[in-house]
Image (cartoon, rainbow, N blue to C red; front, top):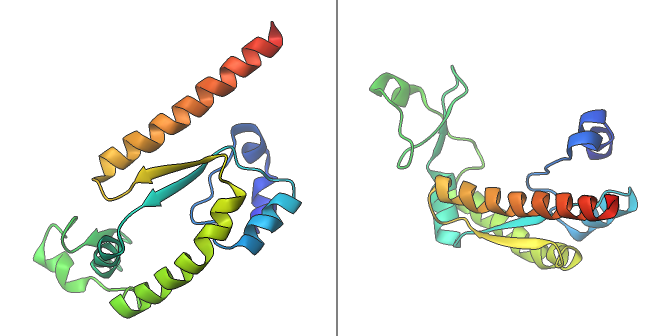
Length: 153
């Protein structure tokens, strides 16, 4: 599925972003064997207790599809609040199991991308996280443009 999507013309022309992939060394190896090499690997660093709080507080409005968070992005009305649902795997126990799996795999994945990894403080507000990522992408594009200009000269 990933291969088919990354081979699409828009991905070839404009680039691609994979969110949460690869999650294991076998996925990273498969990506490499298929000839796909990311230009940048972004690691969001967030303490485990904050991750658990963020996931456990997440809720879905089944009518609109909008995602809320009970603390950080609460529903606008009591009517909306009364119909919100929680994903079956957004419990503290399930989140901790997912994090345990993540911790078992992350170092192997990072070792494959250590030369292109940037670490972003993901425990700050979303605007600051965006600023950090936007800055890294801007630097990458500036570097790429400078390289292409020097090759053309």
